[in-house]
Image 1 (cartoon, rainbow, N blue to C red):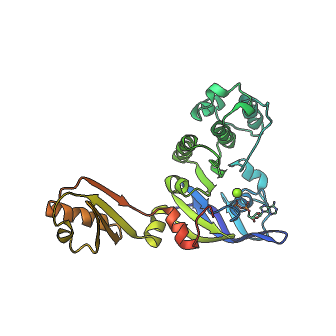
Image 2: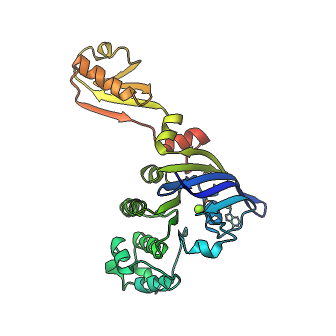
Length: 301
Ligand SMILES: Nc1ncnc2c1ncn2[C@@H]1O[C@H](COP(=O)(O)OP(=O)(O)O)[C@@H](O)[C@H]1O
Ligand SMILES: [Mg+2]
């Protein structure tokens, strides 16, 4: 796997505030990589240093083999950036913004096709201020993609959007990756990270505290699994022996275990014993649980 972004021992202070203490990470070609953590953790600062929009105090950064400070102009042609809480003039029209951005680059994509792909074709002649939150964010994605960058940076892209608009954006971001562009994003939404990211780095107080695929992190830190089923059969607890303690609440049975094979084990015993099951569900920990375990607090505390 080829790293397109390498960050080593990055540090950045604002006066007496240490925003980024010690960040090292690699982003590979063609993946969606998420830098995830609570507000104030140092996500935006890290991202801006990687883009070349902030000067680090310590550490080294390489993006597409370039130094974001020394090679800023060359890099700008090859990356696309969407800023957290970006804004445009109220009365700029969608097509005007697209034309303006297009004029900044020597080579641009077919902008009509791009607007179409992002579901903005019908909004070409609309003022920025009349767009919904989701449409505004889609426009910023369009502007970030206009010069067909190799890497695109998306900072808290879906913050403040309703669930439906969020889902539409997730589909777009997956599409960007599937067309071969590397995506580096930040989010404080664990569900978003879990659904979208191939790999994540968890950042807290300016330090990376874990890094891996969402599934790896869940397996490593939260291996516990729960199976819950309902059955009207008699002697269920006796027949489920060998799977550990079974909790019974009326006709509902709860089994707790660990590891990927646990649920299969439960299903096998149910089948072997011919237990008639009316309902069956599993409870599998999420990235949110991993975060809680690692930090001792919830992401929104
Ligand atoms: N321009 C700035 N001047 C001073 N402090 C800042 C500035 N930008 C961010 N900070 C502080 O640096 C820390 C990290 O901020 P930031 O990188 O924006 O985190 P995140 O994106 O994870 O919310 C926070 O304590 C924030 O208040
Ligand atoms: Mg931020």
